[in-house]
Image (cartoon, rainbow, N blue to C red; front, side, top):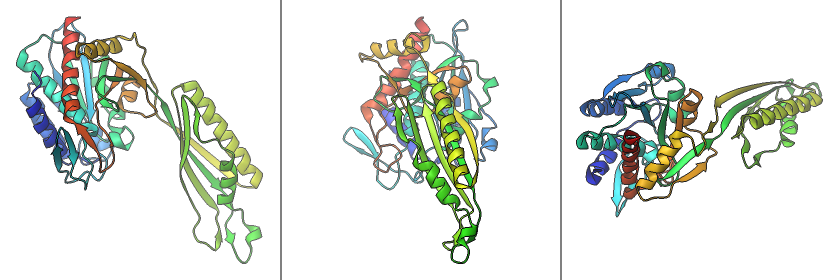
Length: 372
């Protein structure tokens, strides 16, 4: 079954292969070799050109029982920085980076689990449904790989992304839709010492508009944040321009639209009161994920978790993943917790037991799908 030593070796090989966002070429080449050695048909799409990166997404297929529907498994290839020159260190039953970089279990723990599960299925020779594997690029840059994936090459209507927080057995069923909101204020520049009365301070107009906005946790399903503010050219010039970039997220599409509309209307009104003009741009970065406990893809995952002697935990999250994009494209897709901890920091680590359980869970999903 799952080979612990082999899995750990492969995970370390993966994390020690550089693949910061936009520079996934080395990892792509390695994964193509591994997938083809396992008998999968592999192709690379054109997403790399669209995101100005070294690599496109990898799409791989393994034939199975013809009358069974295909299942998708996915993880992302890219990491955040500092992710160049990763050296993994095993301390007891846990794998860390040596401290100068991230480890990269986000999301190479997911990749390792999928590869090991494919090996087990091939070695044991179980009947299984057709399987599709997608390894995406530039996930950390706003899910850009999955947004630019060529979905005409996929037949799966259900699947699993291995990129969630929480221990193996955690099944993320709900995640928010997400708007990026860019506010621009146009005032009037003037000399701050000679004729300030001729100017309209864009920064002050923006500040007055922003001061009344409710930020942070809006309700149990909704959050809002302003993360960037920039403007002005010099300390002695009344600033004629200011730009603010923020976001709103909600598990409810209707609530997100209502909140965004309120923010936009309030901002425009307050800036106008100050004598400045404004423009607001809103872009939906990804749609919501909303799966129910009785959805077949969730029932399958729950049974697989039970088969491992664990209690399945269904959760909502405030963050997005490739699963959001897949669901928006009509693929019923859950996000599975994989035990990665302190991600995006140089303190990142993962327990070897969780690595093993990730692979065991993928194997059980495949086995259970073959039975039903």
